Length: 156
Image 1: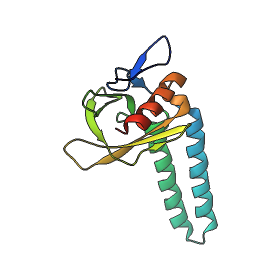
Image 2: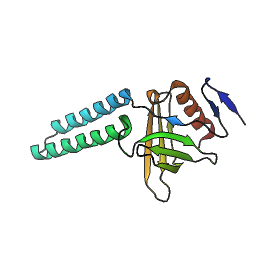
Image 3: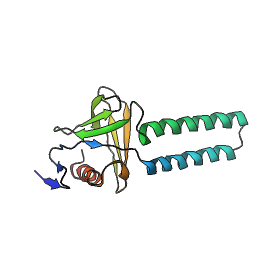
Image 4: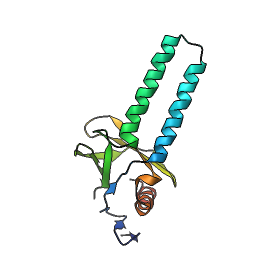
């Protein structure tokens, strides 16, 4: 069993993970989403549609921005994932803002880079898929490196 020591505060045990990852809001991820949505609004304005259709599309884009911002950036939505940890049998536990803990399985592929991790998962008993966007600033530096190591080594 491989044990990696990252700091004086916690151990990451590759065989069994005993660390809870607690997410923080990310300003950088928020800025990225705002620019993406402003670009979409700019494209809608430039397309030759009726103004009523443009207003409806812009309203949909702004609704999407608000929804994404509350769930993935500010983490204030009741379904926003605020904490997660790996179980001993390879699954993951997710805790949302309302305090509900759900056991999920990872749905591959996952995206792992040095600045962003996107983990897709499937809710139990359903075929509903969702994702967690974890930007580098949402975790402590040691925790983010440990998560990347865990996802790359175990692929679970």
